[in-house]
Amino acid sequence: MNIPMYQVDAFSSKIFGGNPAAVCVLEEWLGDDILQNIAAENNLAETAFIIQTKNGYDLRWFTPAVEIDLCGHATLASAYVVFEFLQTDISRVEFNSMSGTLTVEKTESGKLSMDFPSRQVKAGESNELIIQALGKPPLEVWESQDLVLVYESEDDIRSIQPDMEKLKKITDYFAVIITAKGDEVDFVSRFFAPNAGIPEDPVTGRAHCVLTPMWAEKLNKSQLHAIQLSQRTGEVFCENKGDRVVMMGDASLFFKGEIFL
Image 1: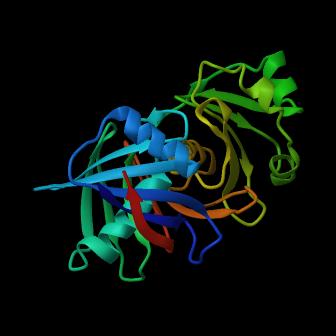
Image 2 (image 1 turned 120 degrees about the horizontal axis):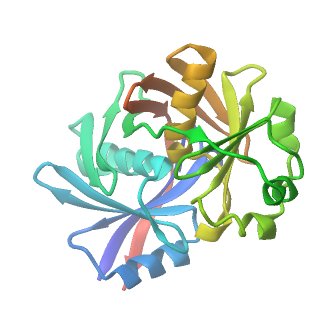
């Protein structure tokens, strides 16, 4: 069996930037163990698997360790593959996923615009484990599927060097997000999910499903410009639309080939 695979740098206008994702194009679903083994072999933050249907595509995402319920950059990468290689005559695609229908449109500028569910936060509390894991107490603690820690400045976000072994002990959340108001953009962030096989993710769409409504309320604006301050760095243009979040970004092809099973 030969499976077409593409590796795409999402949220970047050029290769070696943004967040790399693998996209595998299937004709039918393989066993979960095979999908997980492929993702582990790729050893990227996410591998997306897509199957064309009469209404769009079914979409699943796997980290090297687990299947997850929502991934932005691998959805962006999947849409790029659809538009550039699978259905070059369309500019809008719908993905059926564990998080419902996700729509991606190719804009006139060439950027890809994703319509995702908004994820609201509730107030949380700091504790000694959080402070030990991050090395600095946060100003605010918020909870969603992920733990969100707000710090005073962009410099704080850049300088934090998390203790990954201590982060692994924070098990009530999929990931830990640290964020602050940006110096030249609306907000900045970083994203850590060591228990899912992702010590630090370069650019994270799911994080911005949480951060966009939170910062929209803090800054009293609906359209936001964000930077994720990973080593690769990624730029995300976000819009808060109530129960939905629109995220826009570029994508660049790194390679295409085949998996042989």
